[in-house]
Length: 222
Image (cartoon, rainbow, N blue to C red; front, top):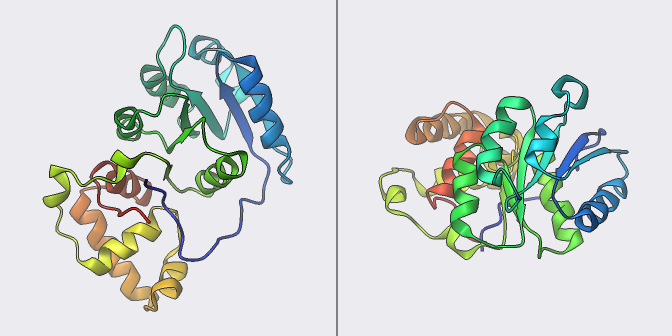
């Protein structure tokens, strides 16, 4: 199992967000909506039963911060819908959910720009924890053994053991200062490691580095 984690528990996202739930099962939407509304931040929750229904919304009016997308929808499949939703609301973090725990779907979703994959079998508490990590800017994939398996691409990435530790914390959107505190390093040293990681992965930002770390098997399972 892979589950990106911080060395120490960060503060939860403290401001209200707008969620868009896209799932064809009304009962599941009802349960997830209740779970989100139980959080103290006062989130807003919109719903759609398909990608087509979501894409028919006024993007400027809906403007979701987080989209929770079921992968096995009638009509447009979740992976294809993911690309269209990214164009429709490029600022939103898109989280994939599915009752079918297919590692290849989760990894392909990350390659297409998703910020996480959450199996529907996950407990309510673990689901909230995963969503909070994504709301803080992290990337989360849980409960899929194959996601942590090293791939051929992983061997081509030349990272030191220390850089892999930094990468593991970076994947949860841990700040440079928090990484320095967790690993007993200077902040300037962390900055040097982060720059080296971005160059090695050939990416421009920390979120893309986190996605690459997961899809290439660079982060070890805890």
